[in-house]
Image (cartoon, rainbow over all chains, first blue to last red; front, top):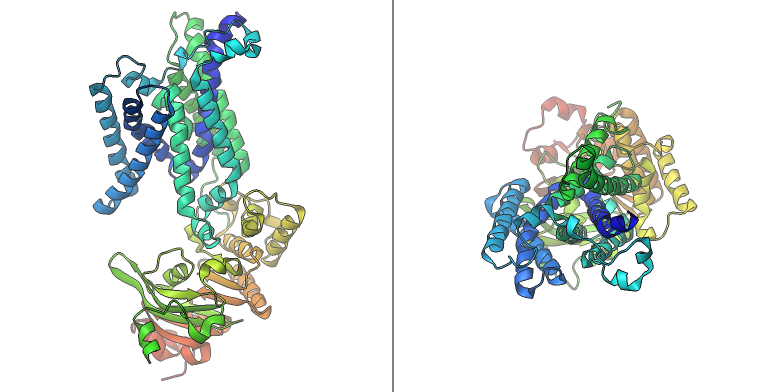
Amino acid sequence: MAGEFVMLSLVPILIGVLAAVACALPGNFLVLRRQALIGDAISHVVLPGIVVGFLLSGTVSSWAMMAGAAGAAVVAVLLIELIRRLGRIEPGAAMGVAFTALFAFGVLLLEQSDTSSVHLDVQHALYGNLESLIWVEAKGWNSLFDPVALAGLPPELGRIAIVALVMLLFTLVFWRPLKISTFDEDFARVLGMRTNLIGFGLVIMAAIAAVAAFDAVGSIIVIAMFICPPAAARLMTNRLETQVLWSVAFAVFSAVMGYVLAGYGPLWLGGDDAVSAAGMIATVSGLVLGLAALYGPHRKCRGAPTDR
Amino acid sequence: MIDALRTAMGRGTPSDPLDSLSDKPLAVRGLTVSYGDKPAVFSLDMTVEPGSMTAIIGPNGAGKSTTLKAVLGIVPRLSGVVSVFGQPLAASRRRIAYVPQRASVDWDFPTRVIDVVLMGLVRELGLLRPVRGHHRQRAFDCLDRVGMRDFADRQIGQLSGGQQQRVFLARALAQGADLYLLDEPFAGVDAATERAIIDVLKGLKAEGRTVVAVHHDLSTVRDYFDHVLMINVHKVAEGPVAEAFTEDNLQRAYGGRLAANLMDQLQLGGH
C-alpha cells in the first residue's frame, strides 16, 4: 500500500504542491496590482513558445521550451503595448486580443507540427499530465534514501522544485520593492526604484512559474493557481505578509485535496474511474475562494471609510 | 540675454545648466511636459528659495501636479533641466520627500498604518536589512507628529480621508528630507486634518526645510504660504505671496473665470 502510494501518488502530489506554490507567490502581487489576468494571459501565450521551443530543440522536457515560453511571454507583453498604443484602447481589450491570438497560433502550430510521437498535444496543454508523472523505481518510503531509485524521479519534479525555490527567493529578496511599488508606484519612483523594471520582473517571474507549472499540470491549473489562493488569502487578513502565508497554505491544501479527491473521490462515490487531477485541484482552489468570499473575516474592507 | 533666450527655448547647456541658482532647493528651467500632442506644461522656469513654503496654484488642468511629477521624474519631460540642491535629481533623491495625491493609491491594500510609514525608511533599510526597534520608534514619532499614533495598527482602508492624508505625511516625515513636495495635501480633508497638516508643514519650515505644495484653495494661500507659483500651462507669476498673489495675476492664470466676490474675499491689492 505504502509502496503503491510512493510510486503512483507521491510525486504527482509534490509536483502539484510545488506548482501551486510557485504560481501563488507572484500571484499575490498580480492580484493586488489588478493584473491577475496577466497570469491567465501568460498561460495562454506560452503555448506557441513551448511548441517553438520543442520544434527547435526536439525534446519535450528541456529548458529550451522554457526559454521559448519566456520569449513568447515577452512578445505578448510587447504586443499588448503595441495594440494598446496603436489602437488607443484599454489594456484589458489589448490583452484579450493578444492572448487569444497567440493561443490560437500555438494550437495551429501544435496541430501542424509532428508532435504526435511525444506527450505534447492540445489535451496536455489544457490538463497537463500530472497522473502520468509516476515514480516507477519506487518500492516504498525507503526509496527516498535509495540513490538508484532517486535517479529515476521524473525530471519535472526537479524542475518545478527549482522554479518554486526561485519564486520564493524572488519574493523574499525583492519584498520591499514589490510591496512599495504595488501600493504606491509614484512614491517608489521618487525613492529611485525602477518601477518599470520591477513590474516587468514580476511578469517574467510569473511567466516562468506558468511555464514550469504548465509543463506538469496544464493551463487550467495555472490560471486557477495564480488567482484563487491569493484572492482567498486577501479575504483572510489585512496584512500582506500574512496574506502571502495564507496563499501558500491554500495552494498546498488545494493541490493535496484536489489530487486525493480526483484519484480516490470517484471510488468512494462508487464510481470506478479517477477524474483529472488538474481539474480537481483547480476546482478545490475555486471552492476555497468561494468559502473565503462567504466567510473570510476581511471580505468587507472595500472602500467606505468610517467618517469622511 | 542669450541665456534668457536659451531657457525660453527650453534648452539649457548641460555643463552649466542653472548658473548661479544651483544651490537652491529646487530650480527648474525650460520644463515642458506633454500628454499626447498637447503640452501640459510649457517651458516653465521655477526657483524655490531655501526654507520657503511655496504654493503651486492654477486652474484645473493647468499642469500643477504634472509639474511636480515631472520634477520628480514620475512623468517624462520633453525638455528642461531640474536641479535639486545644485545636483541632478538622481544624486539628490535622499533629500526629497514626496506626498502623492491621496486618490492615487488603492487604500484597500493589505497593510497597516505603521507599515506605510516604515516605507519612508526604505532607502536606509535597503532590500534585506531587518526593521529594528529604533526604526519602528522613528515611525511612531512621525505618526505622533501628525496625531496618528493611536492608529498605528489599523488597516489603512479603515481610515478616513483626512487620516489617510496624515499617514502619507508621516511617511514623508520618516524620509527625513530637506525638500518636501506635496500634491494637493489639503484636498478633501476635514478641518482638524488641515490644521494638523499645516502645523507640521510650518514646523518643517521652522527647522529650515523647504516645502512646495500643489494647492487648490485660493482663500488659504495667504495664511499658509510665503511664496506662490501661478501657472496655467505657462508660468503666470512667481514670487513672494505679497508681490505675486495679485488680482491681475489671478485673472490671467484663471482666464478671468474668478468671480468678483471671491476676489473681494481674498483681499487682494494690485489693481
